[in-house]
Amino acid sequence: MAPSHVRDKFGYAWASTRPLHILVFLLPLIVVYEIGSVLFMTNARTGAMESIRAERLLRELFESAGVASLHLPALVIVAVLLIWQVISRDRWRVRLSTLVLMGFESLAWTLPILVLNNVIGGSLFGGGAGAAAALAGGVDFSGMSWPQKVTVAIGAGLYEELLFRMVLIAMTHLIAHDVLRIRDYPARIIAVIISAAAFALYHKQAVSDPTLFAFYFIAGVLFGSVYLWRGFGIVVGAHAVYDLVVAFLLS
Image 1 (cartoon, rainbow, N blue to C red):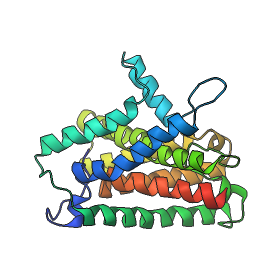
Image 2 (cartoon, helix red, strand yellow):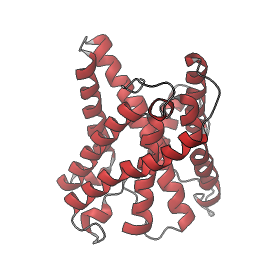
Image 3 (cartoon, rainbow, N blue to C red):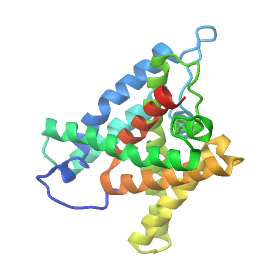
């Protein structure tokens, strides 16, 4: 489902939501995660590769459909964006200025989540619920090497947003709008709320902790809103940056 705004086809606001710029913006993150998973997330004793829970859920979904591949979720992101680019008939031209501004905008959208962390979890750098409120599947970053932290933070941004925003919001909106005949705008609100609730329940420690559940749910609403308004690239960037802040400063 495309972002909800329109807009100037020659300006940053429009270009940053288009598939080619999203793909080029996310491609370094995809490469870093895939390489990091192989080099730093593989158990030397068993040979098993640890991965983001959202990525495992996506792989299991594909496997249930008879398609199995270790790197399939990453290939799906690339394929979807390439197909979208072809169908949209946009120009195959990448603006470096757009990519740079997407990076800064991702940083800017991280700030509300840090404020939310501070409000709900107490002191921003004071530990407690604030430090525990990582979005990376509730991962405990303590004890990880810095390459592992980078890998997990980027993977969470990519695959949690793919699962809960791109896939779940689209499916929920389809059911609400096309099947139940709910008007488009209310259907979008319903989709964001349902995806936010699923996002909160996905973090196991939040199920028994109302404070963490509130954090994840509100964060899910914010990410869902950013996704609909500013697109997949920006919301992945904001999520990954937040997890990096948690990994290196709050954990």
